[in-house]
Image (cartoon, rainbow, N blue to C red; front, side, top):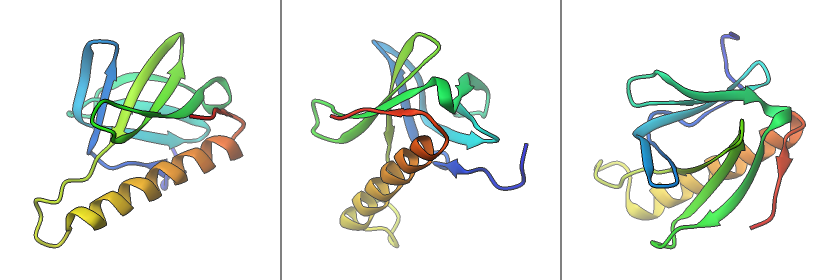
Length: 119
């Protein structure tokens, strides 16, 4: 592993596939050309070379912008969420951080040869 991943969401990602919850405070990491989805405790859920994955924006029932990541035959829904419960991060700032991280993830996937779909 490199010392600095190309992308890391920090532990705040909700990761699901269908009706199955994998993580409520998980992490999305891209390092050395591989994307990894991690559980709350850091255990690996799934991973694949970025060139083999597809990402696209989706809207959940709550109208929160989320990401669908298709890898190894599974479509994961990922919400890079940031809470506004910290006095230093208000609701507007939390949304800005989420949108920035979503855009950064898409840029890194595109740059590393992954497929980026339209919403």
